[in-house]
Length: 144
Image 1 (tube, helix red, strand yellow):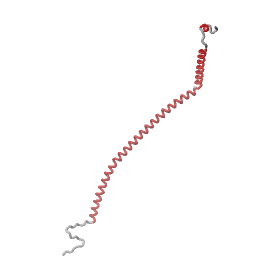
Image 2 (cartoon, rainbow, N blue to C red):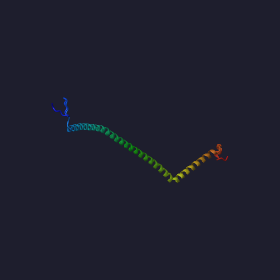
Image 3 (tube, helix red, strand yellow):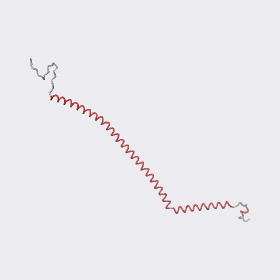
Image 4 (tube, rainbow, N blue to C red):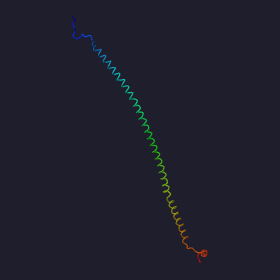
C-alpha cells in the first residue's frame, strides 16, 4: 500500500489550492476591475452632472444679465422722471421769481385795472340813473 498524506485528497475531483501569491494576484485583479468599473461609472455620472450644472450656470448668468438690464432700465426711467420733475420745478420757481421781482409793477397794474373797472361802473350807473325826459328838455339841457 501507499503512504497517504493527511493533506492530500484522494477523490477523483481534486481541486488544487492556489498559492497565496496567486490568490492575492487574482484578488488584486478583481479589485482593479471593480475600481476601473467604479471609476468609469463615476466619470459617466460626472459628465451627466456637468451638463445640467453648466446649463444651470448659464441660466443663472442669463437671469443675472436680465435683472441687470431691468435695473438699468429702471434707473434710466427714474432719471428721466427726476429730470422732468426738476424741469417743472425750475419753471415754477422761475415764474415765482418773476412775480416776486416785478411785484410793484403787478400791484400797480392791478390797482389801475380796479380803478378802471370802478370808473366804468360809475359811468354806466350815472347814465342809467337819469330819469327819462322829453325831447325839448333834452334839447334845452334840462332847463325846461
